[in-house]
Length: 263
Image 1 (tube, rainbow, N blue to C red):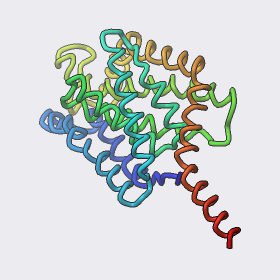
Image 2 (tube, one colour):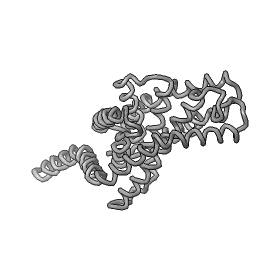
Image 3 (tube, helix red, strand yellow):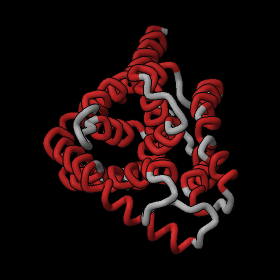
Image 4 (cartoon, rainbow, N blue to C red):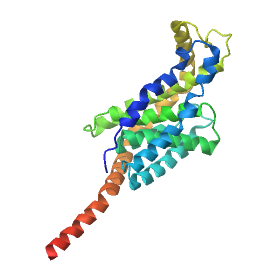
């Protein structure tokens, strides 16, 4: 398996972060309404990135098939948390798959699985782009963990990352929901054009209230799943990766050696 190059994704990160932080950047209500559709229009970038990687043979047919299988798995896990506050087992699978397959694979897996989940559950709307890119960045972010770390320490670090990812996803979702959730008349409401410190204070208070119901349960279930089932799941993913990567090449080499010895 080739190491998937993350250059294209790194180039997307600054604009993605700006897209999440738009409530603190716009100064008129008209711009606020337009900014909320930013990610819905850019969700197709993840699909185009997949096409580009396949066209350049950076991903490969086997990895595309593996990506499809894991995307379906993660998308199927997400609806299990519907109706249960913060219970989202999908992050366990996404983080471990990204660790085993690499950051670019993790980016694509997060984006495609969230998009597929929305299609399955009918959760399509202006919020979908935010969800797609938040999940993609969480999958890509696993790459900050050094690859040389293995064993129990690796599982512990992945569990810590899972807790942070749960909080990051909660912040990202609150950033897209907060400007429209409370109207403009409460002490925590978003006010376009207000001083940065005022809006930031309102958002922190709003997020704290929502985190108690969503982010903390999400973090707990992710950490518990990684600590309990992370090692066998990660080993299984790595075995599947190595078999899909090296089986054909080994068979070809053995066949070439037989022909050479025969001559």
